[in-house]
Image 1 (cartoon, rainbow, N blue to C red):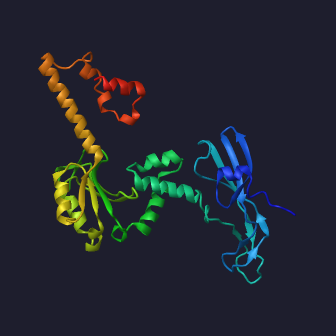
Image 2: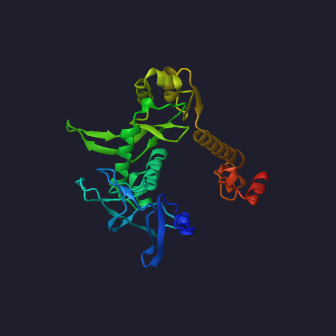
Image 3: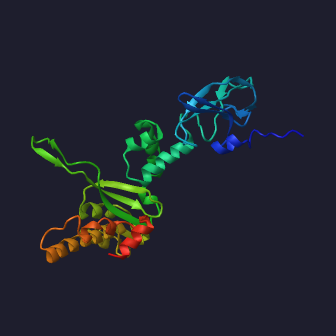
Length: 313
């Protein structure tokens, strides 16, 4: 009995690229190179649908993929150019495609999904994400544009927990307006996030409650009635806009801003006590200033020695 072991070899399992098996792995000067090819040896013609196993050529292309065992791995795909054996078909040959590598694809589907997830769930520059995965800026933007056309309609999404926060993307800029006067360009934007999935729903210019109120009013009534919880920073304008447009939703404050305010209060108390006790500004030798950074650290990030030291303060 003949058993095909090419589908379950250790290298193919380690690479974990669906529909492909590893042929060779070599160590080159530029790094490690892995050569893979599709597991299926037959394919259907895109024009007539007739299956064929006749191979006309085996071109090799380099594609981008997720890092496996390090960042110096180069993936080479040995594709199969199949010959259509149907006499009535006008297409004489075609390239075998898979789910991970569609027609004319230069990056795998799982890498494309990773790019979309990182851009949708985090406020990161496109250039940073592109550099982290070794692709170009237009490549990332092309994926985002495609996904935005498919699932970009916020009104069709079921949002239960909504996050509203302001974000600064750049420095303040000044430009010459149409009237000849210098116009101040604010760098602030308001980010609306789905807290259940972490995906960014929309980004609008501004940092005041008017922008939040306008965005919420543009949502349909059934969409606003589904929202149960809203997380905001300590902004009275944001809270007022949410109360007017989402009266049934419960408003909570982002824990980041709560901790920031608590740390600020600790700093103010330390400064006040230093003036009351020593009648001067705090110094590095004073216990209150010596452990000032220790008081603002997360407890899970402290060592055992730091925790014992914190109990003695």
